[in-house]
Image 1: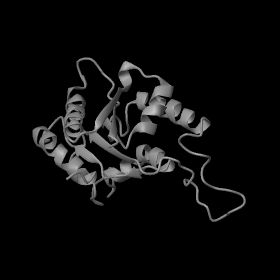
Image 2: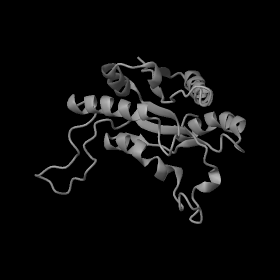
Image 3: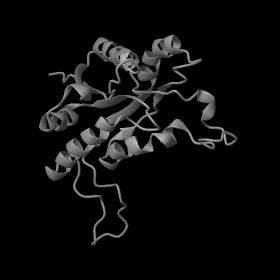
Image 4: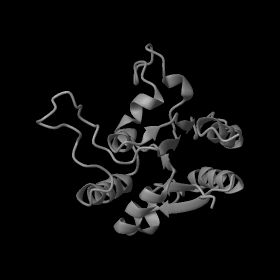
Length: 202
């Protein structure tokens, strides 16, 4: 019997009426949903703003082969509801022993490193983010704000949670400069190509 692969799409957009309604993040989320559906994946979804059950979210993570976070970057991080979601879901995954068993270190073996206690090996995680920041502000040591840092560097507080639990992190996808000179249409069009590449779905 062929086992159908599953993808979990997590949308962490938080609505601010008359300013940030979530249309763009919904559009990227729908692109991913259409792509994976077309590749015979079962699509699991969570829109955090609409509410969630912690135990069900743990089980979604356990079932998923691929997990994608769709998020705006607000003040250099995700909306606060995502931090609450992570605290609740990952604490449950820790206490149940489903996500990890401790932090990997043991008193019996000093060579074991912090962050090697995860149980979610074989899964992959990716961030798709929308930014006001322009692409030129990254990977350039002459830029005043990020000083040469990449999007991967800025997103490490997100990806580390998954890496800590044994999940493989794949390259992020980003839509830059969304309020001024970004290429939103082009970024949406190219998103499936990125998904196909990073998840090796030929």
